[in-house]
Length: 87
Image (cartoon, rainbow, N blue to C red; front, side):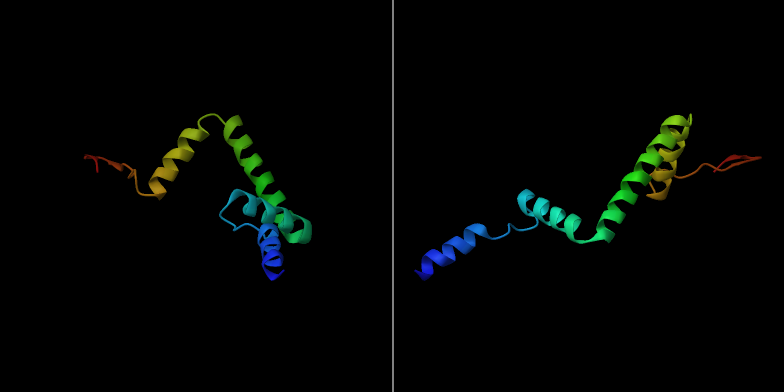
């Protein structure tokens, strides 16, 4: 009888967080239980939508933004112009 109880508990247990079913369960649980999680998720989605809209509507911003990101992660170094040429 103990073996059947343990088997039943094992079958109904929550999956680990790295599996899609376990991650999905934990996300749903956080969404239902915590109002702060809802607020953080909504703010993240709204700020991402705003940023993408701003980049789409402003001409040339994609190129500048990608160039800045490459500079920040040290892929591209800026060119400095002077009277003698560039460094």
